[in-house]
Image 1 (cartoon, rainbow, N blue to C red):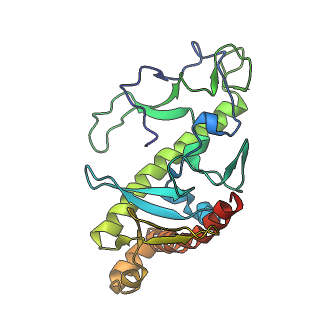
Image 2 (image 1 turned 30 degrees about the vertical axis):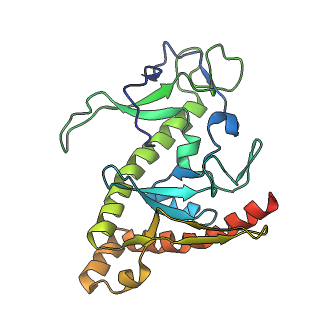
Image 3 (image 1 turned 120 degrees about the vertical axis):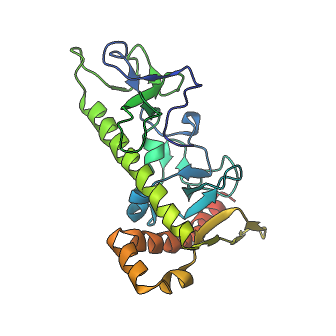
Length: 250
């Protein structure tokens, strides 16, 4: 679920202004573009905006134990309670949704620490958002092959996402190293009378966070981890909003 290109997908290619000069990208929202999902990956530098709209939780890959940040959009697989037809009912839409159908690829993925991996923007040509004849959507390049304002927005977004993925990895590692990650037990009772308990999601143990040693608290604060951790914990209050949205659907 990362924004990195999957080399096994032959439809994901490096973007260039010659062969892709006439491509256009549909920017509408909708389930047909893969947006009917109950979990979406997010990055730590989005937390300021995300916590006003979504519960943000930590997920754990059972195969390798790796933690990730996700926004919870619904209670069932394929359920996005913020998506209503072509409307996304929130002031802020996660970057992972907005970056589609673009990803980050690397010319030299085996580069060591400190070496340039040669990041490039890639595009999934099989995406329903892509039109090769310019029939609908936003152009990426003008007739001379220069970036359009839309392409500049894409480039800026991918840069933010790449930086965000690195800072998120560091953030989650320091939470884990200090034993600050705990299961988030979500108990939901719906208007229908149905009750559900959701497992497999994690959040920050705020009690342990408050008891960190002084030097660690200073380190957390200096690196922005303290505020991010509190935002993460506070965002779980948005589960109530999800229950309200679910109840509206009956």
